[in-house]
Image (tube, rainbow, N blue to C red; front, top):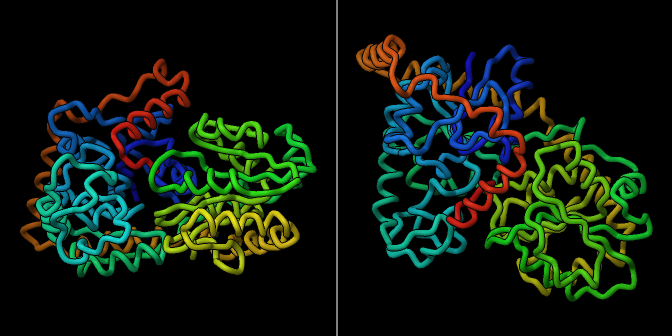
Length: 442
């Protein structure tokens, strides 16, 4: 079997967009490759599709990797120039699944819908035009119709990682009568694993008599950075506290006199990220919207409790209230709970131990891949049954002709190694562009 992952980039979302699946799939004798808009690695199995060409989606269809694939797996295509109007064509040419990492494909334009319920019928007269993916004027009714028409006429199945998103998609008219698979992500427990916290802190230059709080530092409307800042500004304790952040730097300058702050830019080094988790006591994740929460299970896999908020997937991902703990999405309430935990570190340690045990049983990587391969097999079988005889002949004709004749789109050039000398800088240039255009990255 040959699997082709299509998405916006390779490295930034590598733990769930297919990039990290490459070596694991080899263990199952499955080949995989990627087509992405932004190539940040030097990997030979990844090719870049130039977004500046006339038709990004046609370029994908004509690419050799697409033509040779047995199944297509889409990830975060709404962060690319991908034209969803071609979905009925693509899904007839190739068996196709899409992992929905957020509810974007349930509505007219929003990545997350907050309290709005219009998407359950038909988006119109949007009250939240500035929510990413932001629009200048209200054409949400049209965009909703385009999504609905394209997806209803496509032979496509969807994969979601959480029961929270599964319940949403089951209420969507866009996805009515489509196959929806609930498949929680797995975590590499050989990398994300518990370690002696004193040794982990020492490696980072943190004194072992301090309490360490870790969180993702990102200044957008979804991740709850405002709640974290409020809580840190208002907790009262004589204990020394160190903050570990991953993501954007410079967002906590006003707190430098109160805390020791260890800021790190976003990293693609899983071993280093694991060290950061291992050196922390509590992981803070008060997201306003979250469809799964991969960082939460990584922290839990390292034996850390997660303090989060209700009404997102995190409440269930972290197994509230036994392992992680979720409170109302309110800065004052979150602060009070953080204060309580700081005064009860024995409880924090017990929750961390339970969190590790829960991840071991619930988010095993081998179970994820076994179930993913079952989804691939079922999708391929259903695809063969769905196409009428004349449709199969026409699709075979299209593919054979595209394979037969060379064209400008086939074998799209790979990014040269010269441009990849500092992939971290490229990642942050991409993040900056995405944030400026209010596009959700992860």
